[in-house]
Every structure is written in C-alpha cells, then in structure tokens.
Amino acid sequence: MNALIEFAPAVLFVSAWVFYGIFVATAVLIAACFGVVLLSWMRTGRVPRTQLFTALLAGVLGGLTLWLHNPQFIKLKPTALYGAFALALFASHFVGGKVLLARLPQSQIALPDAVWRRVNFAWGIFFVFCAGLNFFVATHFSEATWVKFKVFGFTALTLMFLLMHAPFLGRYLDTEVKRDDAH
Image (cartoon, rainbow, N blue to C red; front, side, top):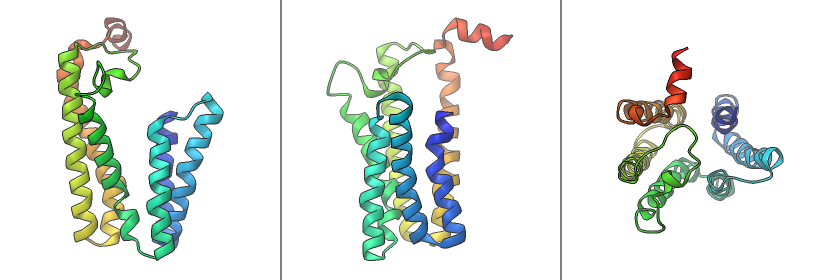
C-alpha cells in the first residue's frame, strides 16, 4: 500500500502531462507530493523525511517552473533528489555509528555492519549515476523523452538494481521469512 501511495505523484504527473502539458503536470506533482505527506501524517502521525524533502523540492523547483514558465527546473528535480540521496548515503559513512541504510527499520533482513556499508555505498553510487543520467536526459532530449524516462526508465533501473542485490543478500534473509515463502 505504501509503495502505491509513494508512486502516485509520478503516475499523476505523467497523466496530467499527457492531457494538459508540463505546467499543469508540475502543479499536479506539487499537490500530489504534499498530498502524500499529508496522508502519511494522517495515517501514522508522523512524516517520513524523504517524503517531506521530496515535496519541498517539488514545491521549490516546481514553483520556479511555474513562476518563470521554464520547465527546466522541474526536469532537474530528480537530479537534485538523487544527488541529495547519494550525499546522505555517503555522509552516513562518516557520521554516526551506522550507515544510513542500516539505520532503517529492519524486520526481515539482518546484515553485518561491513555488508551494510557495502550496500549503502552501492546505493550511493547508484543515486549518483541516476542524478547524472537524469541531467543528461533532461538537457539533451525532448520533454516527452524525459517524462517517459523519468517515470518508466528510473522505475525499471531501480527495480533492476534492487534485483541485482538478491543473490548477494539472500543468505541474510530471516529464516522464518524464507520458510514462509516456501509454503
């Protein structure tokens, strides 16, 4: 359910873009991002930082897009978001006792600290790659290509990257989870 809610702004953005263009789609994206924040707060009484940061980034860059009537700002939102994620992941190697991914609630997987550090670093590299790729697509291709790549290309890339972890991390899955999956 949470994944569907988190993906809603992207779906609403591309739908609005198809029917009304980039400026209406940008306004829809801003509203949808803040809607996700509000929905999270109403459901759980708290707001995840990544959701709030994404909404604020959409508000600032989307607001600039609408105010200056220049779609380049909203096209750079993924670059800024991925760059911030990468920076947070890399910085966590030097701040605090655990890397960022190891600080997230763990219910089904327990990794040694050394493995968490490698996984955290790999995700940092992945987000740097995504930030650069978005910048390249946003500045070298048409708006239509960028919109499709933003929604479908990055979703596919993230899923592939996640699946590439499966063989490496499978041995660390909780045995109860493995047993339940076998039945």
